[in-house]
Length: 240
Image 1 (tube, one colour):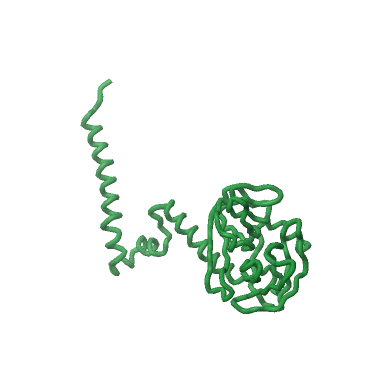
Image 2: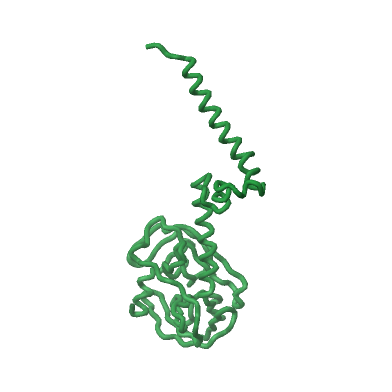
């Protein structure tokens, strides 16, 4: 079988020049076109500036996901309360209805002793409606209305490897926040396990999916990992 070496070399040359041309276009020509007002009239440049043309799809997806999490954090912060007691320090609670129902861990409130609840840095009056020792949940009614709330995820849609994040305030003025993100590493009937490591300061904080939907309420296990009381347990507490 005869091999046409000249033809093969031409093909390789064309491929090489094409790749080189694409590289030079991305490095030099495209940035110049974007920065020059003259090229704003061209549809290609308009589409690129509006994000309709993606040069690197994988990088774009990563950036978009981070942006979604940042937006979700800002949204859910409005629904987070701080629970403060001399005995237990600062813990976190979550507003779940606009008329003032709040859920937190049962062990975030002292059995014998007083504690305070803060919303947007303001101390509010409240009463404890229910304590579910078995599932380690407590339901509190605060004397405040027109509050921001979050949506609940469908418990059946919680999956292994799902991206999640938690948010907590570590000051009663709620001017100092922490956030942490990771994935769901284990699911069973009683709790959800994550790969997130954090301190006891964040106990009671809500865990969300990247859309900002409630997945559950967090506690720190013996290994220092974030475990989660799932959303269906919270719904049972509410009688839903």
